[in-house]
Length: 220
Image 1 (cartoon, rainbow, N blue to C red):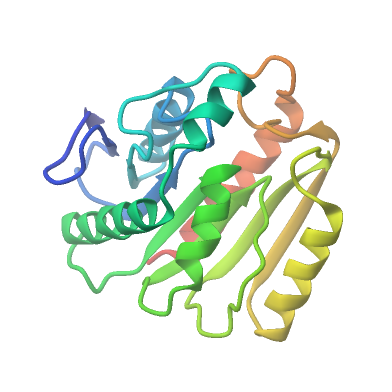
Image 2 (cartoon, helix red, strand yellow):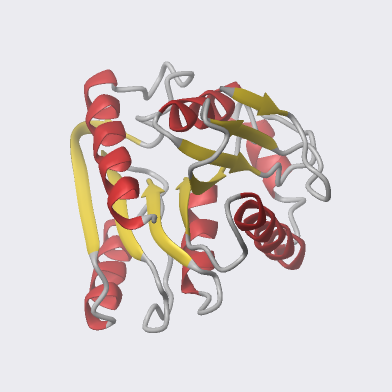
């Protein structure tokens, strides 16, 4: 497996490839902690499953370890810049994986999950599969080309249950393939092994297995 820390036009991004050098393309969008070691390791895990995983750095080098730090860095984000950088990263990823017309998968965590849903809503996004960890977003998904999978905590101070219900109705009304999984006994960030206060190993193993199966099914 080969990795590079940056790619032309995408400063500080992280790329992980399988030994073959090619595979299904997956865009990974980090949580509000930034492009930290956990996200890099997640990309490496995807590469071992045969995916080409690219994680753009939406914080441009900044990484948070506490909630206070994360809130401060997140407050500096500008929506138009984030939207542009995600679109550029997706275009670059498709170009690496046999052409810009090839559909990709997107995996987003918390803040990244919100942006993954935004990107999937874009008609021209060419997203075949969107996997979201502990996030929701109100939107119009009628023209989205994506199938959806959600991994949600049973108790979540950051994701409102009513918001999830509304999202379920929106995806159903749009006739989208959507899987919703709620993991008993979990809280926000339960999948992230570096968050000792929230990590749930059993739930994380199950969510990982479901994610890999889903991405292999929908991303050509």
